Image 1 (cartoon, rainbow, N blue to C red):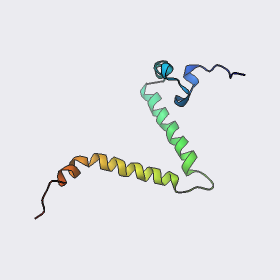
Image 2 (cartoon, rainbow, N blue to C red; image 1 turned 30 degrees about the horizontal axis):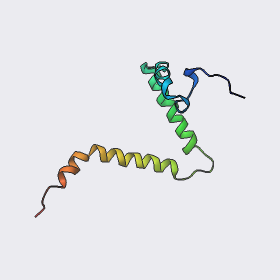
Image 3 (tube, rainbow, N blue to C red; image 1 turned 180 degrees about the vertical axis):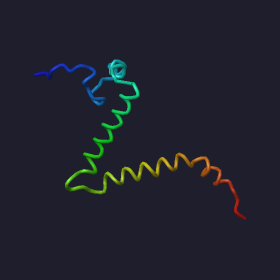
Image 4 (cartoon, one colour; image 1 turned 90 degrees about the vertical axis):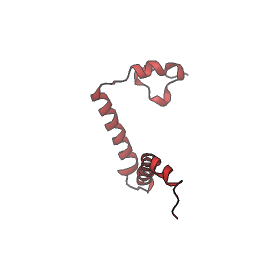
Length: 89
């Protein structure tokens, strides 16, 4: 028994086939208001899944700290790259 047909716009990104990707992307709201609302939905989903839980762990905080460390390294990579070749004597 096959499931009901769902419109392309109602599918999540993980459910979209590669051939349908262009149509799915075209159905998204790319206005500034749509982009801000998508960011807010993602933030709310993250907070509800990892932060606002009854029995939480270190997972949510560790992800934020890991992302911060990775982003800091990317921002400072040019400076770090030049430090490798300096001689301190």
